Image (cartoon, rainbow, N blue to C red; front, top):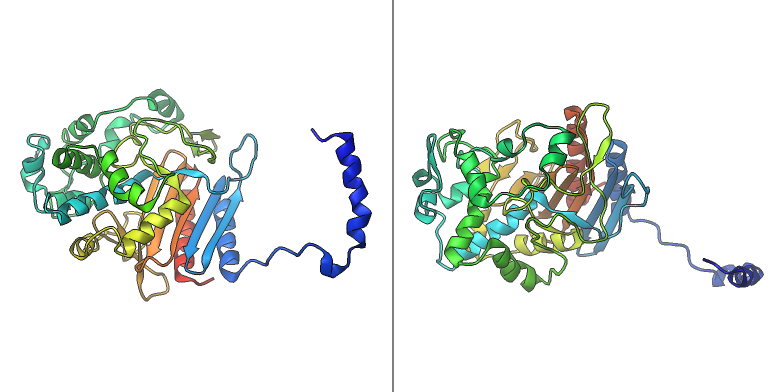
Length: 393
């Protein structure tokens, strides 16, 4: 509470401040740069497309540029926090793939080893055969394994979200759910994104090292890079503060439901459980792109890609490597590397230039049920990333 004395003292300062010469007055805040204006414009466009809250951070050799738009939650209408904590979702896969490739560089693992050799009996039945699926297939989504996510959400509704959000599955249980179904295609003959692949990758890290994938990510990536605000919380459903609230719409014309507590069957394993901040995510991607985390041979393997087929939700020309996607700039000439993540109520997109000199993270803290609106928001987000890394307005 401000006292009467404080108010009187503040009032007494008014004539003194007013009498100062223009030269002595407080300097005006600096005008935003062209990059800052472009970033803010694109963040506002995402808000105008229906996203409740947006945060962007761009790191370049010239410094850091940030933008925020919308609100941090729909109840208090507080602003989106500066430097807030984020659910990284499937960006977790990039950290896991990096650890696997480090193990390859240490000759403790080969990308050509099969799942059956490493995890005997884990992938079998209904036409699934771990003898035909390699570690490389897992990391670049060419295994043909069905995505377990179809089996842990009985229906797309607010009721199903609230009923199931506290349940956690062991990795073996998720794989068992997936292999009850026939493969989408024979291993190595097609491409389809499947979270089951990275559940298996986490299990392989445990088998090869004797320690969990979480421990390996911490020891090999987070600690060396000084990423103190990036975590592997497993089934812990609570984000550190500060953070924006996430909101999911489940029905047309229905309300936005607060889904800041995640749906744990989706968000508790090597396929999507990590949390962090935009600052630290940019630092990780910059280090990875610049070759600071992998040896040249493994860096080359990570960036050896297969085409992503049309209709998969990626821009035309996108290719999938090992834990990363390579996306061409919309104006031609070059590409950038990154990965996205999403869950109920949030979308995160992180990317860096191929030399690691520019990195951007954008987070959107709501998701609509309408597919056309969702696609429009995703297109605006891609344009934001493209503009930020391409350096054009």
